[in-house]
Amino acid sequence: MNVHVRAFEMADWEGAAALFLLPKCQRGTLQLPYQSRDDLRRRFENPPDNMYRLVAVDADSGKVVGMLSLHCYKGRRAHAGGIGMMVHDDYQHQGVGSQLMAAAIDLADNWLNLRRLELTVYTDNEPA
Image (cartoon, rainbow, N blue to C red; front, side):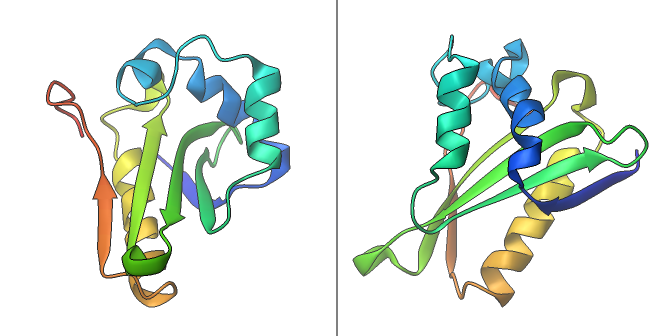
């Protein structure tokens, strides 16, 4: 699989929103089901402070096949960040999540000076 990881841009919003609506993506995250595309677009347009978003793009088709958000905490927890990640149903188990995580770890270690990354995972989400 030829996937390129880069920063999220608003031009990616429709592909990223499509991920939120896929059955396997919804089941494996803490996201609410039945989100409207309008609500998702607003969330993408107005991210919280200290939020970094990465997308995995299929180099052949240009399709957004994965997304990772890294939210840097503030105050006493400024050394830590929380991760949310999803990979398109059709692209799971092909290394896309690993590439997104590697990019997030590089960002955290070498640019954001974070010492701790947190990812909340359901116990039945074996791929995570």
